[in-house]
Image 1 (cartoon, rainbow, N blue to C red):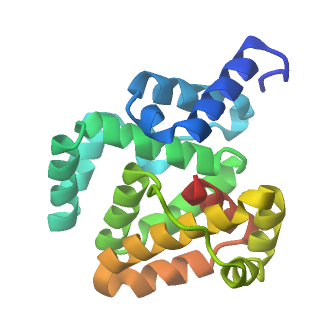
Image 2 (cartoon, rainbow, N blue to C red; image 1 turned 30 degrees about the horizontal axis):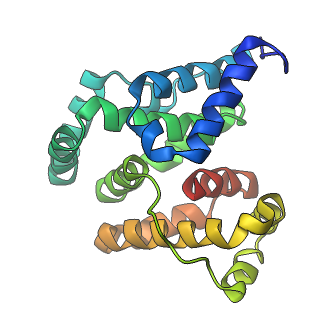
Length: 214
């Protein structure tokens, strides 16, 4: 059952979303709030659309074991997360991002999206997880008008620019910075990731970009 617009749960969700927008760093330091947000997002979805989505709903132990099977990139990220706030806290950041990204997808769309993503090389997958756990960079200059116009040449970009309004230059700057940081770290697997992203349906790409923009 989805939450009614004036229900206590919907008001709680709106409050958490405001906190995420106003002080995302504090949100990522609060695993209780992150877990509650994931729970509320899942409750919004029809029962038939509530499915496990990859790393997003794995336990800490299952996720850590899965990372270990991904070779050096996975093992390095496990160690990094353990030293930076704890593995569970970082995993929860990724959980929240994934669940938010997929919250408007049907169960079939969720499965298809995650299956395609899971076929990427391990290095590319790990760098996506790392980028999602790090959150967006601070103190970026707004993207110039030409960059915003270029971003808006795709259907999803055009819709997001209209949605963001005066915040579009800031959002586009965040997307460009996070994509550049992640893809640079991917090395030779960068092409595989870009092929995956460029092959997304417009509504899928829009969901990814909205989460990346923060």
